[in-house]
Amino acid sequence: MNLKFTISYDGSSFFGSQKQPNKLTVEDELLKVFKSINIETKIILSGRTDKDVHASGQVFNCEIPEHWEDLNKLKQIINKRVNKSIKILKINRVDDDFHSRFWAKKRVYRYLITTKETTPFNQKYITYVKNIDETLIKEAIKEFIGIFDFEYFHKTGSEKEQTKREIFDAKFYKYKDIYVFKFEANSYLRSQIRLMVGFLLAINDKKLKIEDLKEQLNLKKHIFKTPANPNGLYLAKIKY
Image (cartoon, rainbow, N blue to C red; front, side, top):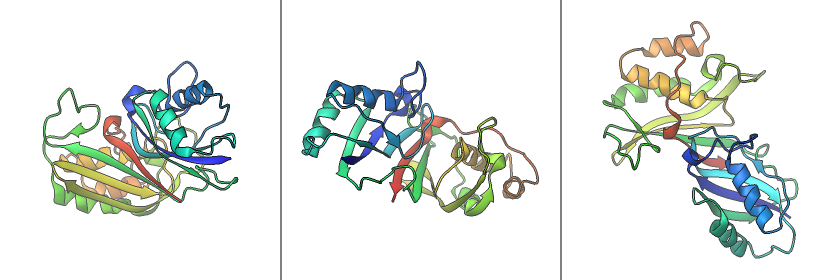
């Protein structure tokens, strides 16, 4: 049977989500646990996250033998055995042709920043910024909404023939003492969100202007090339 798993994980414990030779990844850890309960399967992730990037709503699907009909029991067993930096949140039975990556309509990411100096207990999970100009960032982030060629907003050397993407929504808001960048799109290029946030933070610091952002989005000038730190980034939700 085909099952859809919704999971969260602490990205600082892994070299990304997707299997890599000789490196511990989220996929490696999950496959190890499945093997320990005599399940040989292949995991299909909704999308990859890099080292130090977290997830509060990552999704994957895989084929599981029919006798595992008690999905609550399966969830309990996996959560008991899996690395404590991963948690299975939900398991649902889905159509045989469900594909967590190809069926995804929207992917929501959040990037968290704070004006309070970080501590040894939270510095892996949020990015410190000395001052925030909330009004300026709210104005600037709207520029990303729409269809653009993000050639100048992805990691150099990553192989992508098609660099056009549509950002359906982009918001900046404050939740308690945390500031949140929220992006919603069908898909993203490698490091795209971190480069977008990095550019917005450069505008916040008055190092760049909104006009500079427009020029880079329209491929007139490649002004900014420094992605924000990965530790503040979260894959928040996959919409189907």
